[in-house]
Length: 272
Image (cartoon, helix red, strand yellow):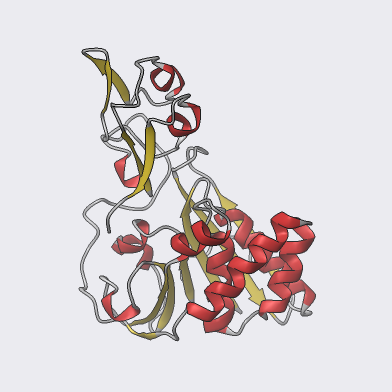
């Protein structure tokens, strides 16, 4: 039995990726068990999902505590040592990370491969939804599920043009993902603690949830305050008739960008 743990953030499609993998395995005559685990159930909050694949019926019912494979959909989470918790010796990490695997910052007795799933998602889907891109990488480096089975599962779930765009993301990631290497990064503990989506409102900062940050062009801004009204986290303030942002509170949901009537707000990808 192969046990897999997926890490992502709300809005990136980690749970959907888990279900697509399970369905793809079913098409190949395998048994699969997909388990989602939510925290705050908010866009940007950490999300974990678990998957078991086997040639025989899966009778385990608890969460995956010692995965063979860890899949990470978010580039910031990919740099957290907490993703390695319980990973079996010699296990595999598949990470959304914008640099080659020999530059992956975490080290230990595991293999790693990387793919810039965010860039692929923006290229193919025009949105930073990284789940289908990471599935292309998973198929290539593990061989556990054929890429054709993943595509079939995607088209079953998303028929039409949306499905075709996601299939393209799978194919591009499949081509761009290198084969795994032995991890060479630093072995260290996670000073931020375990990965958990619980406790929002008690945490000091949600900045680590962001993949993109909103940036204002004050020449276009008319001071209409719509961004301030719509911000769900009270991250936007007002000083001298112009918006200001407390980036500790901003989780990068993009609502302000979508609602701005003058397009004065640009979504800029966070530096890695």
